[in-house]
Each structure stands twice: as C-alpha cells, then as structure tokens.
Image 1 (cartoon, rainbow, N blue to C red):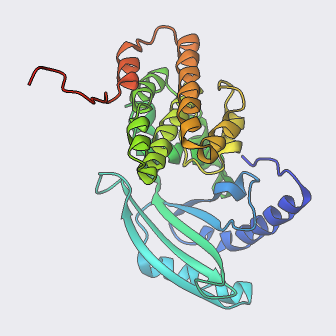
Image 2: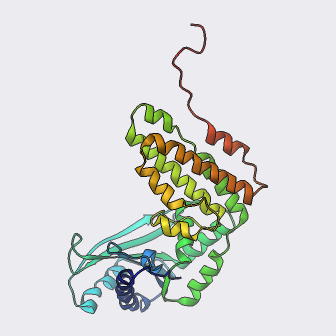
Image 3: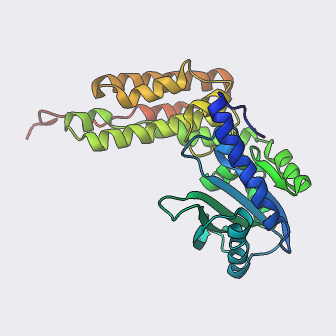
Length: 311
C-alpha cells in the first residue's frame, strides 16, 4: 500500500527510488526458491525524502546462502552501469527463536562508497518465519516489538514479486485482536509514568530528556494499540499520527513541542497529554480495568527535606 506524496519534489524523489527498486527486483525474483520481493519503508508509503534509502525484502522458501546473496548483489553493477560498493552479509536473530527469528541483510552503495553512494538495503527471511510471526502475534498475542513492526510493514509494502503470497499476509495482518490491544495498553499506560521532576530538580537534563522520550514512546505505543495499529518504529511521527482515528488533538505538534519546551513546561504538558490518553482509553474501552495502570503511572518518588520520623 503506497501513501500519497505531498508535493512534486517528494513525488519526484519517491518515483526514481521506486523505479530503481523495480529495476533491481528481477535479480532476486529470478533466484531459485524466492517466493516474494517487496519494497519497504517510507518510499513504499510515498514518504521518501532526500535522505531515504531503499529497503528491499526478499522472502525465501528456505534459508538463503551468503554466496547466493553476494552473487545477486554483484549483478547490480552491470545492470545499473555504475560502480557499486557492497558490504554487510550479516545474520541477525531478531527475536529468541533460532529458526524463525533469523533474518539476513546486506547493503550496496551505488555510484560511490559507503559514505557517498546511494544506499540499498536488502534483507531476507523465510516464508515459514513470516508465517510464524503472523501466528505469534495474531493467535498468541505476542508483543515482541520486531514482530509488531513486521506486521505494520507488510501491510504497507510495494509488491515487486509474489503478489498472491504477500496479499495473503496483508489480509492476515489486517486482523488486530482486541485482546492484543488490551495487553499492550496495560503494558504501555503504566510505563508512561516517570520521575521527571526529580531529574529536573537535580539538573540532570540528559536523563530528563531520555526519560521524557521513553515515556512519550509508551504514550504513542498506547495510542497505536487503542487504534488497533501494529507498532512500527516511530519515525515520521506526523504521518503515523495521521493514521490514528483516536488521539488527542494536535498530537504530533504537541509531542514535538515537548522536546523544544523549557523543561518546567514540558512536564505539565506531557502529563496533560498522558491524562488525555487515559481518558480516550476509558471512553473507547470502558471494560478495561485501569486502576493498577493509573496507580503506577501516578507514582512519583517523594522528596524529603526533613526526616519522616523522630531520629
């Protein structure tokens, strides 16, 4: 699913990136045991800008070998008729599962090295792994961040090869269980609580803004759960807020203002936002027991100038 670009410059930047992905895709589509190829990320959603690279995902019926991945990327240079700098060929364990948690990635920089060239990231996982991720989240209510991001992403890809399979996954990922939303809300709502006053009093501004950022992450994650939207990374917050039907007014501008405010103003502004989020959850999910979540959110370390008992 591709989003609409906002202006001619963005359209132009998006279009040449998509054309480049479409030119590269047949290299992977023609490999043995490749099931599907897709373009991910902001470019696939029409949100690319001058800093956007390409993120291409390949889905295999088996685990790919490094030789296959390297040979595929080595075809970029003759195809594109420009120098290509290749690096990576890494294996990652995205979540604790030695089989289904594996994915592989490498990158190419076209027209220059890893400092000056345009970057193309290619990642790989198996079809079986993707199916397990869908089942883990939808059937077993798994809250693993990588899995949630994967389901968000698969619904918003530009399909380059293997449309029937990816469309099947998109249909599955359109399901968002109410029970998962409730589980995530009860995780993220209490985690919005933080001792901002203490860090400001100590003039620990680094820790203050770290804690404010972390608390704001939980606030946005709670709203995504309330809206039954799988949580991606939180880049392009304005666009992400636009996807939410249920949210406090002016959500993204108010969050950005938190980071620019004088800290003494950021504290009440953050707690006001959090209060509105709690109110929205109570309005739209009145059956959810928020007593414990509210208590934990409201808990603060109390200051003591004087001894609380006779000493």
